[in-house]
Image 1 (cartoon, one colour):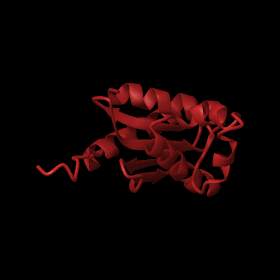
Image 2 (cartoon, rainbow, N blue to C red):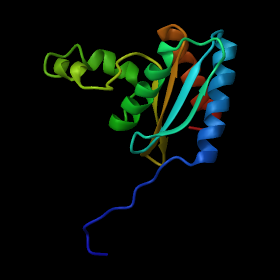
Image 3 (cartoon, rainbow, N blue to C red):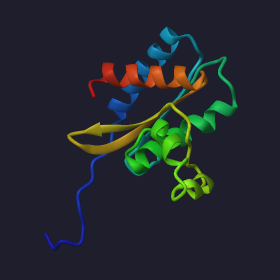
Length: 139
C-alpha cells in the first residue's frame, strides 16, 4: 500500500433497513408520524421512509439531520449548543447544516458509518425516537 488512500466503512443497505424499522417503531411508540432518513458515511441518502400523514417539510429536515450527523460525527442536538458559540455561529449558514434534535451519527467500532435523521414530531419526540431506535439497533 502506497499511503495515498484509506479504507472507509459505510452502513449497509440491510443495516439501514433495520434501523429505519426501529426508528418507525420508536416514533409510533412516542406518538408521531415520522420521516426517517439514513445516509451513508459520505452523507448520501441510503434509505428513506415517510409515513402517510407526515409533513412534507419534514422530508428535507430528516435528510439534512442525517447528513449533518454523519458529516461531523455529532448529534444535531449538540449542534444547537455549538452554534451558540460566537466562533461557530456562522456555520448556521452552511447549506444542509441542521441544528435541531433528531439527527444521530451511526457508529461502529468508533467510526462513523452513516447518519440517522428523524423528523415529524417535536424536537423532544424526534430525539427520543432516535435514541430508542439506536439503542434497539445495538449501538
